[in-house]
Length: 100
Image 1 (cartoon, rainbow, N blue to C red):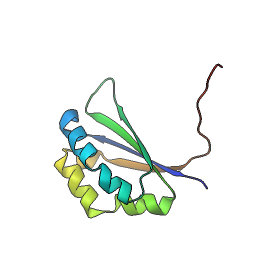
Image 2: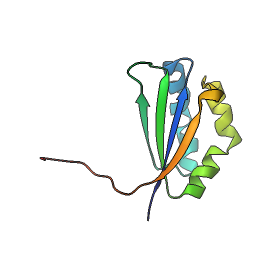
Image 3: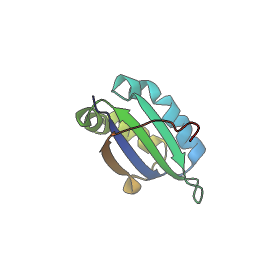
């Protein structure tokens, strides 16, 4: 089975305030098909954020990002709506390089 990875890049008003809201949304993420995530923060601009989410399929990912509750949570968290970019990728391989 191939996972779908979403990559979401956006700017936030305040990273710490955004992070609190993001963490509080975790149960809803889990209920709607998110299996894993990663949060990345720009070194140059701490309010420039990339988040990855892992889903079973592109359909599950698309359904998640269409949820009105998600849009409301993002707004509450201080996400600049004009900055949101969402891309979807099929996972081809993942792993850890040990002792290379």
